[in-house]
Image (cartoon, rainbow, N blue to C red; front, top):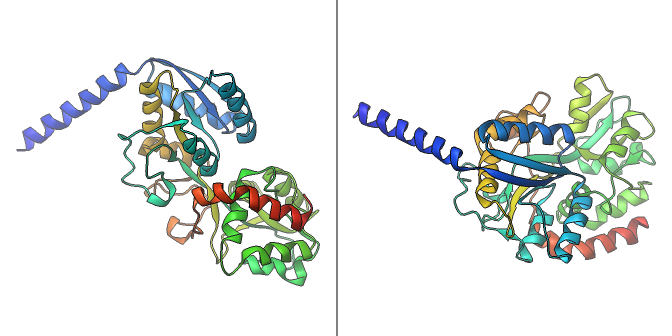
Length: 326
C-alpha cells in the first residue's frame, strides 16, 4: 500500500510539472500592487512557470480602472488578469460580465466571506483599516467611539472615500454597523475631521504630529513602527474593515491557461507565504501573520457585503459629501 501511495504521489507531481510545462505564452497583468511587490510577485510566478512572459502595468486601482474602461470603450481590453485593491470594483466588473469564472480554483481553505461564490474573483490578502495614533498622544484609543472624545477634538486625520478604495470600504463597514452608523461619521465631522487624499497622507500627518489620531490601513504604521516611527495601530474592539486585493481573469483573456496558473499561484500556500513575506496579512488562515501583527484569531473583521456596497456606493458618497463637504 505504501508503495502504491508513493507511486500515486509521484504521478501527481509529474502531472503537475507537465501542467506547469504546458503553461506558456504572454500574460498581461494590470495591478495596483506597489512596484516592488508587483515585481516580486511576477518573479516568483515566473520561477514556477518559466515559459510564461509576463507584461505588467502598475498604477492605483482608480487609474487602472480608468485605463481599462477606455480599452473597453475601444473594444480592445488588454489584460488577461487583474490584481487590484478591492472586491467592490470586482463586483462591478462581474455585474457587467467582464470576468471569467474559474471553477477549478481551490478555495476550500479560505473564509467564504472573502471569496466570490461564483469564483470570478479571489481575495489574496487582508489589508485592514483600523485606528492609528501618534504615541505622543494623551489618549490611547481602543475603540472607534474613543475618537469622539474631547481628547481627539481637531486632532483627527483620515483618508477620503472619494479618492481611496480602502476608505470607501471602511465607510461602508462602519456606517453599516448598527452601533455606529452615519451618526458616527457626523460625530467625526463635529470633531473637526476633514477627510482628504489617501492613506499615505493620513499616515504622514499622524506620524509627523500634525494630527494625532485617525483611520489608516494596517501595514503603514505596523511596518514603520518596526523602524522606530512614533506610531501605533489599533485593531478596535468593534473590528476592522478590509480590502482583500482580489485577483480575477477577464472574460476577454487571450491566455486563460496562464491566467488560471497565476490565480492558482497567488492562492497557493507558496503565493500566500510570498504575501506575508512582503509584510501583508495573508488571506489564507494557516499562514502566520508578518512581524508586528497580532495572531489571526485576535483580528475581528467587520461584516461586509461587496454587492450591497456596490449598490449603495453612489448614495454613500453623496451622504459623505453632505456631511464633510467633499
